[in-house]
Image (tube, rainbow, N blue to C red):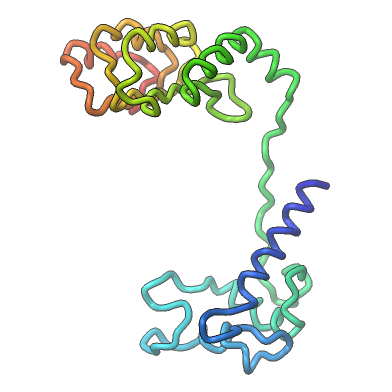
Length: 213
């Protein structure tokens, strides 16, 4: 029910954005194809200065042009479905989002929940879950800049095995924290600019199996 309402609102919002037109007035006159510039400009050759969209931008897909004419003729309603028009483009494949099992997710997050909360209170915004369905964490210490150093990273170290993404850019973290970073076995993205770690540490970090960047 909620998703259907959001889709309906998106259609209405998109329609409301198009209908007023631009600085020269409306580009759609519902029910009047001849005076609707949105349609009359689209089939023009690329050399025409009034072509819409301009040749410097991607052309409107053929399927969209196909349905534009009957849509305007039928009143250009913000709630009309493509399926109502004969010879309209095929329906876009539905996207199925993975269902979130809230109870199972909270159970999986429970062991580190208290520590995550403590760190969020001490280092605002630095530690949080990667996504609404993830138990893995991201550490964004760059938000604190030079106020975040080796002692602070050690405070985060109990969450090392849950950390998949870390940004230490512009912090005062040094090579002294190499052991903490090497304990992050699930780390797949690590930002260090402009921290200058010795080659030996960088080579050691390169051995982290999950690390991709």
